[in-house]
Amino acid sequence: MVVEKPLTETVWAWLDAVPDPEIPVISLVDLGIIRDVSWQDDTLEVTVTPTYSGCPATRIINLDIETALRDQGIEKLRLKTQLSPAWTTDWLTARGRERLESYGIAPPQPAGGPAHCPQCKSGNVERISQYGSTPCKAQWRCCDCLEPFDYFKCI
Image 1 (cartoon, rainbow, N blue to C red):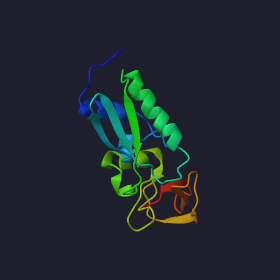
Image 2 (image 1 turned 180 degrees about the vertical axis):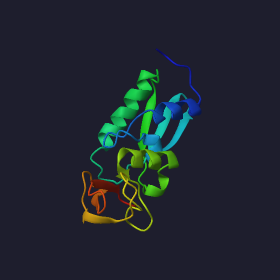
Image 3 (image 1 turned 120 degrees about the horizontal axis):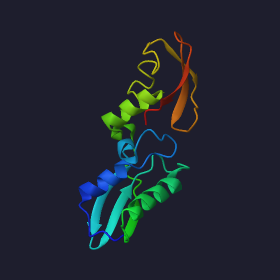
Image 4 (image 1 turned 180 degrees about the horizontal axis):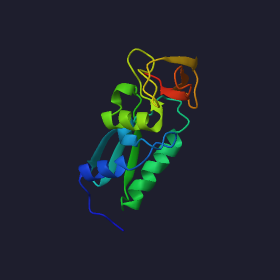
C-alpha cells in the first residue's frame, strides 16, 4: 500500500501507537523520545532522542518506528538520532506519567523520589535499590502496603 505524503499530524498519531519496548504501557510519543517528524522532499524524517546514549532498546525502538511507518505505506524514511539536547524526564507527557502510575511505576519527581506508592497512594515509601529492572528505574517499596514498585528516575 503506497500512501501519498500524509500530514505530519497523521504520522504523529501513527507513532503514538508505537509502545516503548521496555515499558509497553507508554508510547514513544508519550515518552518524549520522538522529537520531530518532517518531510524532506519525498522522504519522511523522524528525529529520535534516546533516553540515554547507551540505551540498549534504541535499535528495537528504531525498528519498531520503521515497521509502524512502513505498515502505513511509507516507503522513503530516514530515522535521525539526535543526542543533543539530551533527553530528560521533563519530556514525558502528562498522559505518559498517568499511564506509568496506573501500570504501577511511580513517575519521576523533581525531588528525586516517588511522591507516593502507585498501588495504595501512601507517601510512606523507601528506596530498596538505586537500580531497578532497567537502568532508568530504581526499586522502591511502600512501608504501608509493603508492595515493591519501580520508580522512573528523574533525568
